[in-house]
Image 1 (cartoon, rainbow, N blue to C red):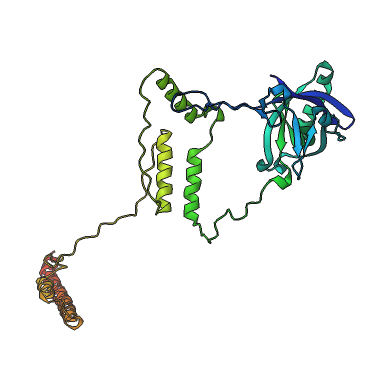
Image 2: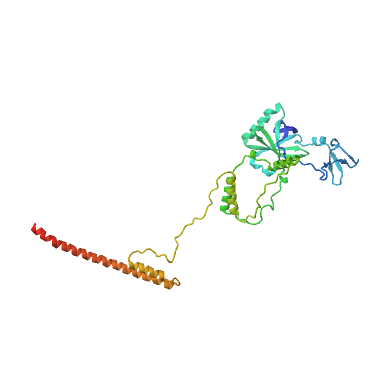
Length: 355
């Protein structure tokens, strides 16, 4: 990898020669500007306003425009001789826990490569010290005409540096959150947690740029003179009126996309009650009187409360009569039993005398 900056890491009195290498690269597809009528390339040419002629890149330098429009030329040698220690040095100023760094402050990422064999030992020392402390190093360095803030951390066997924005470059989230007071129910949070658990984790290596793939297919089709592939139709999304239903559907769709069987929907318990029909007579509890009483109760209309209570009274009276009849029958049986017992005694006495 080609280095974009050469310098050293200042670690107290230890100096580590390093090379700065880009840790990321862009795979986005670039387009050229063309003339739509004939496909001709549109080019930008750089002209000098004084001489009114096109100039080459080797003739172009830097200049600062003052408030009155005056241009002050600035050369690379002027910037290389800046009276600051970070002009060619990544100066470590502190070591802090990694969670102290807000991701909003992170900018471009770089790898720090050891600059030759003499840098191997101090480079390894700094790397192992960062590993054992579970901390990151905060440093200052100068790059592309300005002093910057950076964070050094261990990535594998290398040291990486993330450019950081200065604190005053991060905007506060004022006016971003909703102004209205919104209450979130526990059941909604439970469904949101279930959706998060269903989606689970993912290996970032499995993700890719689908937009870039689609653009490449369009370019290949047009280059071959074929029809441009059409995008699959998507169902029109409606307004989400029921948040709970949307969460439940999301959980179900996420499980189906992962090949998991969706759990049966929770439904309210339904209990089937016996049908009440005026024509159906209840079972008789015993005796013909109870049956006749039931018929009278069914025949009585249910228009008013006073009329309804009358069959109940009749039923109670009939029940009392039935109970009295049972008691009378039991008494008769007891009397008959006593008479038969006394008759038996008289019959058995002569047999005892003959013996």
